[in-house]
Length: 462
Image (cartoon, rainbow, N blue to C red; front, side, top):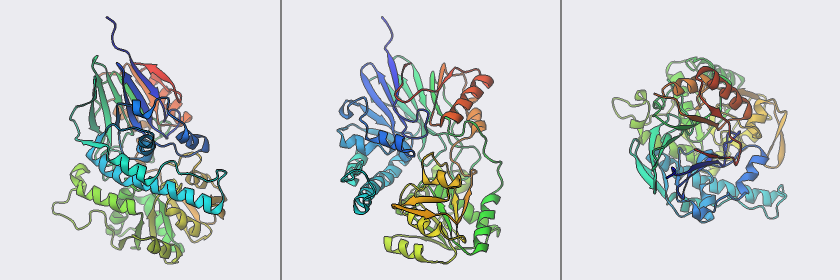
């Protein structure tokens, strides 16, 4: 009798960094690993409106690696189209999904309203991809699980979550089939010896591996003990303007605050007002603090602190009115606001006011996908479109790669070398073609492992 056929279809993050979705089929069972939103270039964003090659109601289970939108942001759309099953994830991921998904729905609705109000969409009327109500329904289907506890998510398929060190609750997902095969979905791989989060777990044995390749062609700058950030802050303070930091609301805000607080305590920067202008980031800070046992040991104080991440002059911005007042203010300040690639959210209002001002600085502290405002700015754009208007760029634009939550080439290889035995097949995902192809060549040359870079929609038999 022949062995059961197991197939894998790459529905996202295939030769691009966004839209992570992988359909695993085994003996008639269908499980979707990650349910991410395409972001960045228009051709990718349009894929969010395409139907999947499988009906939502025919998916048996969904499993999430972590709560970034490019891994979970399509879930409300799928639920709106009829998915009624459970969504398995870690408890930390469930917490953060309860923040990011309703917020994403609100942003979708607000963007549609703005487009209709100002007439800058070719669609009449412009519609949201999904609504806040769709997102609220989706979070009711979350099934939180602990790490290192195998659970059957569908007949013949068992999953186990392993800490990945990328984000609170982030995980590798190890899938075991009834035929004995193992597939490791790497999600996003965290970094070594970084603050806030612990190092990624050593790799388990796996027959097939999917691993990210975001920075597969480069190594991050050597650790500088925060000096590059200190220089940006000192310069911004000396020029008298605001320092605007577009930041991913979960994960990156925590690391930025860690470093600002540390630099203040070491008297390496002037003490400035620090504002977090993102309700979602404010809530995420509470989750990080409540789950301090899951963070790096240095984040676990000997005695309970009032605020794990607060700087000397720290303030969260709650209401839209407070945000507008902060935007209008001309006082020196550090403003940390979402979104991290400047694709939406309150940060756009701060940038709209700051970009024409040569005293201001806009500092990017994370990956900027092709097609985003963030990528355009770091590549030297003289103007960018915000809220339907062309905004001139006279502010100083800075970029730090040291805070990336994604492993670089050396760290990916370091993690791959923790495998006790090589996988029979490696698939590179979550990367643009250049870094992905470079990493494939490196893995094949240094490790001798069979490695492929699947295309969007490609289906393979495991």
